[in-house]
Image (cartoon, rainbow over all chains, first blue to last red; front, top):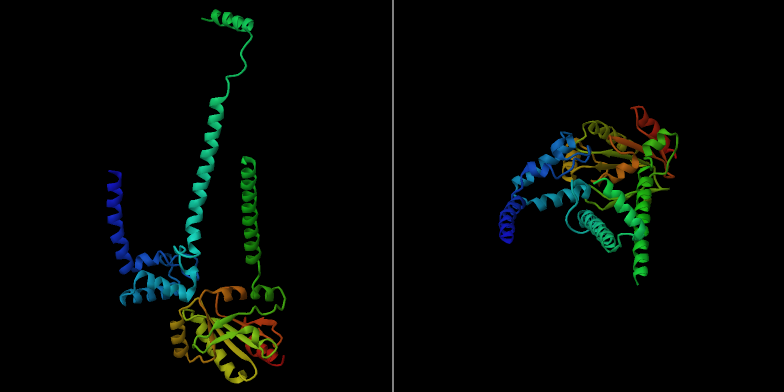
Length: 146
Length: 179
């Protein structure tokens, strides 16, 4: 059942991603490209430099370029910093995987620590047994409060 | 065995922390490098940061280091989206015609599309050579935005000034031409 759900989700997502790659829209690229002079994405800027890039993107979309082609063109002109998020290849992969590895590693360390701690507590004796005389006296004292 | 594994893990953890600290120090040190503009404002005459960038016209590259000791330089940071750059570049074009035999004029088209930059040069009749600094890394070393930014470098490679007012242009040009 779970596998079927994952399969259906994948079948729904893949065509959308492919359509986005083949026929990108200006609005989606505006959110993925930085304005080189204002430190925000293009969709948050009306600086002349941002308007210039928006115009070029619109021209390239009209010319039929794919999303990758447009992004590659921008990177060739401005460098990798023009992209709001690093690319999922080469050195850029590090930015995607290091946080995941860090979170998984931290979870493993915390889990292992918790597991060891709980095992140690399970195996521990309940403490030293009381002297029989003292135990009898304690029972007597407690019985007075019943 | 368990002890050596624990030691290895501890060594790795310490190495990771030291590495991250080193990265942080390097980054802070790099960011705290004041640009040429700030150095000039502080009364210094910094050595011109060099670059080696492709020319906009496609005719090879310009390596600033190769000019040191040979010719004084006027360096003009501009972009096709920069409105005030039009007037400044036109003034430099006129100055280039007068001083071009003694002084090297180099435009640095920064954070710009090279195609738009070439069109802009043709439209405004700018003919002194320019290089393309699309990422703006060179501009950052010289002081960053805003542009236009125009610097004057003497023959020895020292930056002697930045254009602030109109009168600076002939004054600095005469100064570096005589250097």
